[in-house]
Length: 208
Image (cartoon, rainbow, N blue to C red):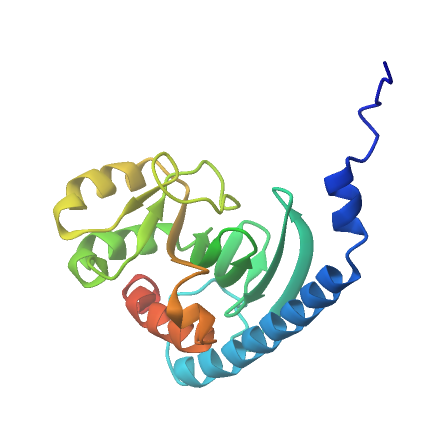
């Protein structure tokens, strides 16, 4: 009987890594996603022009970044941060994340000196936020990207008291919206439009 090592590639794995066409397709898809995120940056820049924010001192409204990686829980990912502020404990960022094998997620990441105001806005302006497909992250860190039971709680009009109680115990605030990769709007390349639509629904949290 021939023993196989845990390091031995299976026939299926050999077929996959030998499929040059697969890697060419992956490169083409990555380039398309990058172009969509660049277009998203431009669309958000126009959408947010002239708006005032409750933002940390030193916030630069022009700051942004594009990032690409391979290992977000073993899956490739690409994201845009804009607006972008990571300054020590202060975080004020909208991340548009294209997570292969999962979904596109828009997440407003808020932490630091202004957190009390953001939390107050969440409660005072709750019904402006509710009903817009937004969710509150329940994770103990800003860097969890899964959604659903145990990870997120939908922001709906009937959950104000429950969500306010959850938020009261937290030192940061993460509100997100997730859209499946199979959604026709994603397939049609409308990430920029969805980004602007989502940012409008989140503005009550971060405007004076």
